[in-house]
Image 1 (cartoon, rainbow, N blue to C red):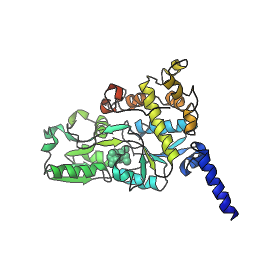
Image 2: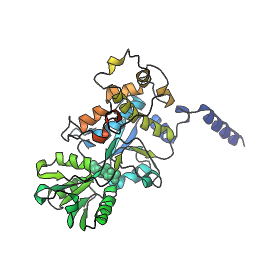
Image 3: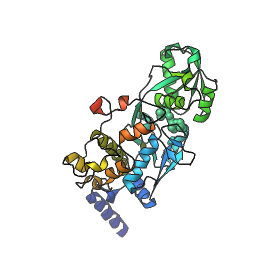
Image 4: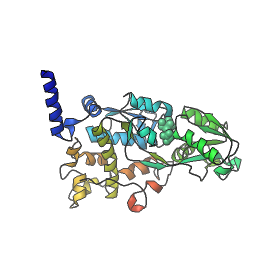
Length: 340
Ligand SMILES: N[C@@H](CCC(=O)N[C@@H](CS)C(=O)NCC(=O)O)C(=O)O
């Protein structure tokens, strides 16, 4: 009876405390107590997530998790990276082996509902493509009837491949390989006519090939692949921290605030910038974070454009265009939700 009353009082207090750290869910509480979190990534794709020869993880998806580590702990190293194949990733998040996935996972209805996940902002709008050796002389996916296609299991890629060939009444033989390093070796070694994946991953893999110029990515994009970080259902506060870390990076780019010019905004009169950078209090506190969380992210990691260009764009070997991933103010789809 006494215990029941204590529990009821605790529940009432939690409701009264409202938002913020006081009622953080189990995941965020555990992360704060541990002083770090675990981020599931892919096993190795240039530009997106790859371990350097020094064992340090780098790439666009890695930067998202490092930015969350900065938001929480003001330290980009308070995160441990755990590599998974596409097939391993969902059980790993469901069972709590990791706290988040940041690994080019596509947001879909069944993953969002049946699998029990919450998807954050789409950090890379992508579409599935096909890569072939130029020697094949193929110019369009419609000419791929009878081809042998290398594909990873447990992906939207595998499902879209079947849909596309069925819709266009084309035959194909799939070569299904779980480890992406083996999959690439099979394709570049000539075991398959075609390699299919998110087109950004194809560009990344092509850039790292021995003879990139021998290969082309065909023009068709056969699907929508909105890629972004995801967490388990059941901890809204952890989900919020993930979402607003991404939005902080996009909002910073919208205001022209980057790693290299951050301190020139110290005397700004622009109210939105003052709230974003914590010169006016409240935004961080509402999330259970330091009011300087966005400032710290930009200083340590950079804005959205910084991490795009360094890892995937002009500053990388991959040289992807911003395209759909440009800011909405320049005709793209990246759009931050208001900081207020
Ligand atoms: N976006 C697709 C494709 C999956 C995909 O690209 N998965 C990543 C992460 S699990 C991968 O396997 N990348 C190769 C790697 O680096 O391991 C999906 O979500 O099903």
